[in-house]
Length: 215
Image (cartoon, rainbow, N blue to C red; front, top):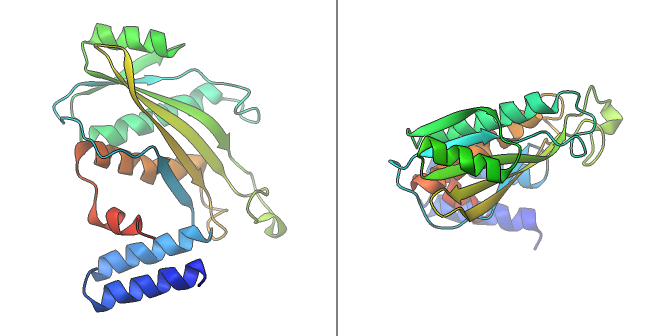
């Protein structure tokens, strides 16, 4: 049985038994389209079933731009700042005691020192690893791996400020789909992953996300 048939039959069984609502069905359908690269795909690797106290204090820093990872981008520092701001905005929805750094931390050690000066509990270090922003693709180029398909990859590191111990590294991946190659931007490809990560750490992962993980 092919994956698409198995996915479709699974959705049908869940629908007939009343296990999913119409809203959940829509979310699962979107998940199926993403799995076949018609829509943008996003993922968070490194999922653990543990949560953090929403009263904890966090510090988000801006990592230095790495020209070797984004050689085609003229303003890597601006891109890194924007990604750090995205991370801050998503975590702030669930963790109100969060501070955003004004400057660039040249290393994780420097970021840790800054976090200790802020008197926070946890350091969030968002580091971009890949940022491909394909420009004006032609119709013949809209294929996975070709021009027109945006990619983004990043690692978010969570550190216990008191001990300096790295608690977790999460890898975020995003790729635009065949139907969205013209409209997607790399920054949009990590939005859902950042939302999922913040929700999970706060203990508020949505039911729709739990169902989607089954397929």
